[in-house]
Image 1: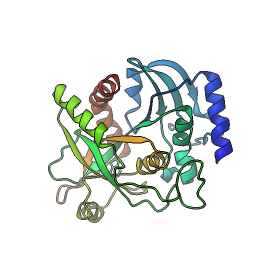
Image 2 (image 1 turned 135 degrees about the horizontal axis):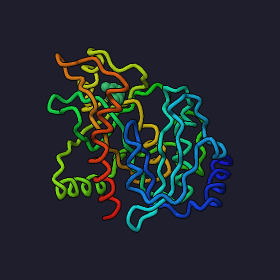
Image 3 (image 1 turned 60 degrees about the vertical axis):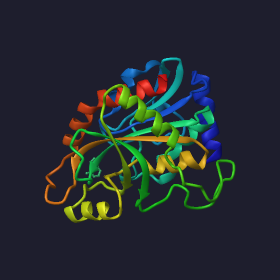
Image 4 (image 1 turned 30 degrees about the vertical axis):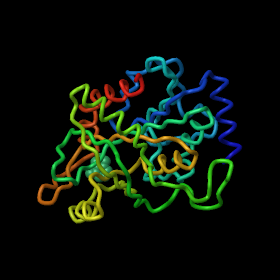
Length: 269
Ligand code: HPA
């Protein structure tokens, strides 16, 4: 993958993606966080060499370069999910590219189902740690030492410093946030009540279908990672109700202004 990454990096540098400080991955329903970015360049994924090409309608995305305050950011509007059929290498390809463009801080957002009984729909959870229950691993196979080590330390997958900073900002802005553990399953089915119960027993607060591969690769390449999740539905025993993708998008959309404010202030400070 090394050569492909370098080729894509060169292409983006030639287009003006110049030394981004932060990489941001915008999750389901959170795409409009880009409103916080003074966009300088936006390139559809289909035009970027070596980027996976989505054939699923509504999942076409673009890579954005611009500014939040004085900081250069690169943002993915739309991510590649494992359940769409992408290989893990493809899911994490953009993160590798971000690193070689100069990104050392990765911010990842997503929508998730809350299994912690104190959580409510529409609330926000800062990810303190994760449990990887996906059936494949982005580092499965031969390791390329140029990217990072064979065995990756994950004792602080989510930067304590960034979490503390975000908690301060949430406090300042009077926004209440939870802090909890995200468990990743492959999807695309939402969980059965028994599965939500399993997720809780395993020690997680929320469950989703993304984020973990990207953070693993961020850590492989020595990035500081931060994750934020909108609780779009509840998988709490006795209260599990029908959930649809439309509902998930709707709730995420409602909360995106708040997430946007938090991320904007975080980067500015
Ligand atoms: N489960 C898995 N993924 C999700 C959920 C959920 O309940 N909500 C949003 N993404």
